[in-house]
Image (cartoon, helix red, strand yellow):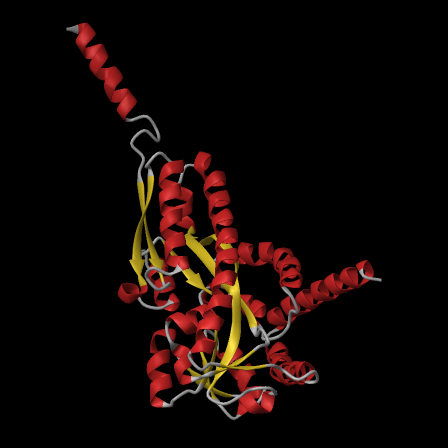
Length: 338
């Protein structure tokens, strides 16, 4: 009898050892279109995390059709209904508005320049994001945005004649566009196609891959060759959810997410190039900027940005740091080619 009790106690002690019965299902929102590269990447990450943790951590993915926009998903994370979300550039500024700096049009000249500046500034922003109750799992470049418009756009004045859709997150950024002379129409992404069909807007900026797959370009069949801004893809969990995961898994989980993002960028660039070819076959018109146009764009955009910086000291400080790194990169780059 005593031996039986001892065996029973040993079995119970094994069952209640810390971590032995641990499991976590992460409810994660996903704004990407079903079947898109980003959608498949998130599903793959869920499988990888399940493998790494021996089945202790799993994903339960909720698509945008059910949850809504990036804004909706972040609100659901704040009220505890979602544990995380995967979203594009529109999402992160909902948590940390200064992140919008990375989407200022025409400010960085190449991927190499972008990577240098982004990697310098990212740790500061991720710390601010964490202070607001979120944990960035991966946040990286995922393609490039282009201007699409009903009529050709070469100079700022051409775009100023259009009704430009802006998926906005802060009144300040929206006003900065207006102060630069653009006719802004705030539009949620899920409403963009209807806005284009009704004529409420007739210009937008978007990844060529999304413009082609969603057929948005059919309503704005001119594309400017100049890259407008980088597109980002990020996966963010609530800090509470991240802290529930045993520490022994976290390093490999983050490394897996970051490698997946890197692979995804290479796939996206190849797909973007093919998307442009397909759109050209369907009457997309490619407009190349004249040699003197870029300086005019910089001058126009700076008007609104200068006004915004005067109103927002924190943004001014972050912008000055960004410009310092851009200058630093260009000086190093120019020295290598002398």
